[in-house]
Image (tube, rainbow, N blue to C red; front, side, top):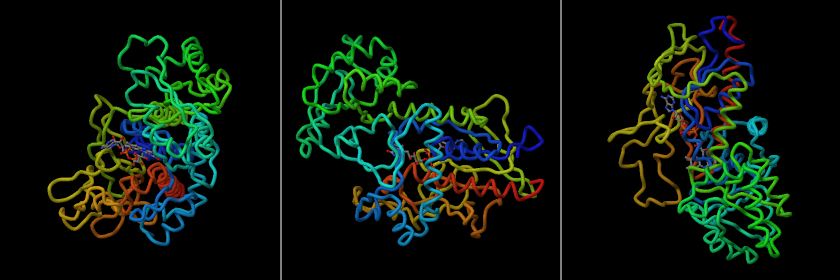
Length: 434
Ligand SMILES: Cc1cc2nc3c(=O)[nH]c(=O)nc-3n(C[C@H](O)[C@H](O)[C@H](O)COP(=O)(O)OP(=O)(O)OC[C@H]3O[C@@H](n4cnc5c(N)ncnc54)[C@H](O)[C@@H]3O)c2cc1C
């Protein structure tokens, strides 16, 4: 479908967070030529866990074992929620496709089921999620069975305390023990960083020494949990070596951001999209763009690059996130979409952005602000019409959702990217000569 003019691509994706990465991936999988603009910095915060839907309604804090049943309830009760607008088959396909691409790029996920899984967090609480990296899977079973388990941490690694996890989770898990060891080769280093340890464990000798320190501590443990530092690009190999060396299932627990699972995710997504021919302009930001008179070609002006300061595309996908991603900007009076100034669905006045109680279970109205889109995922203008026929929006910039409280961050990103790219492909394929 690539345009005959080599400088004009089918799709320009603005943003390289989870939604932008998913959109670029799905576009390439559909044979669309694609340029992706923006850096994937926010993915470094990712835990590696791919939530679809954990909580609904937010005010009640009701947790769902089946995210699909949760979404069915969401569709009845909050039909404007972006996830409520996507059928379950598409969501399943989108997730399968996403983790399939991660797997091909060396980041293996456990097969997806219909049920959410429960995972131990780095503060000892339990998180509900759908997609679990293979390296964390044994922890799901250990937690379910409350089997005797040893948690290991490393002196100097401040963002992870096995003692704290055991103190919190041990209340309902009597067989949970913890031990602290020195990380081989870093005995004289006061502060350790997860990424350094992950890289060090790709060295066979360091790995063997670490295993030999843990083995005598096993006791009756039937599983061993570590901070998520078991390798970076070669995490599969490192994880397998720990299991073989210790003779029991081994699992990782995500650490605080910036996390090794986030680094792995970013690396895997970058290689997945690049391998499919997506051109990445990761140092650029889109300053402005507009469509030509016939609405069939957009020209995007880029900042942050010395050459190639513009991109021409037949469709544009806005995946610029909310306030942290800078897709939305707030001043004293209102919220606006940062590039085009598209209308943002938001509370009527600033006074109603937040509740007085910061920790109110219902969350804050401002966290549901975002773009309204039509049934084809095109942002609406002030008259309620698509702003441009070939402009689409995906991910957290969409209105009527609070992904953090609903525990649906990756699900929202992946499923809306899938649904919107389907429409992009349909439009570009059906309009002859597009
Ligand atoms: C602390 C933290 C923990 C998380 N934990 C989980 C978790 O446990 N499970 C889970 O499922 N998900 C988790 N997430 C990830 C979450 O799913 C995603 O961040 C969320 O879905 C939003 O993704 P997004 O791509 O819509 O927006 P963002 O991640 O905000 O990405 C937007 C991107 O657009 C770029 N951008 C903005 N404007 C421009 C411009 N003009 N030009 C070019 N680029 C631009 C930004 O630089 C940014 O990279 C976590 C995220 C964070 C921050």
